Length: 101
Image (cartoon, rainbow, N blue to C red; front, top):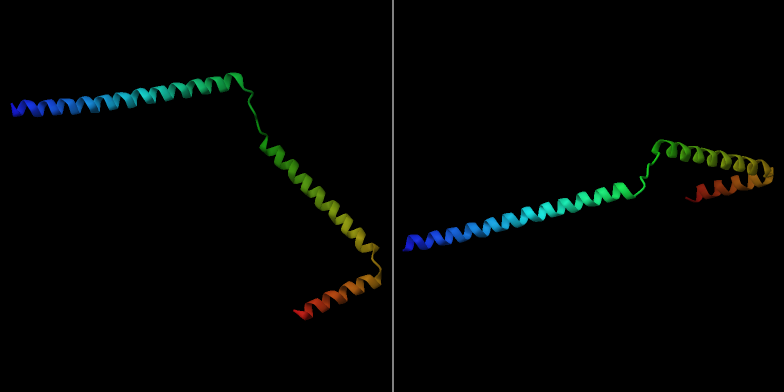
């Protein structure tokens, strides 16, 4: 009778393990099915966004170069507008600052 009793425990334990495995399998199938439906709906009813990474980077680079060239022109014209006295005053101020350090 004791041998029969352990067989029942093993049988019940295997049934529990089997039901857990079946539940995991069914859950994975359900998740995979939802995933496939989502991808189908997304691909069918949404517009695709394509990014032109090369040309956008080239345009950004050109804009940066243009900004740098414009700032150089402004800086150059500002330096030409300074008088010799203003340039000498700026030079003296810079020299005094360097000696104070």
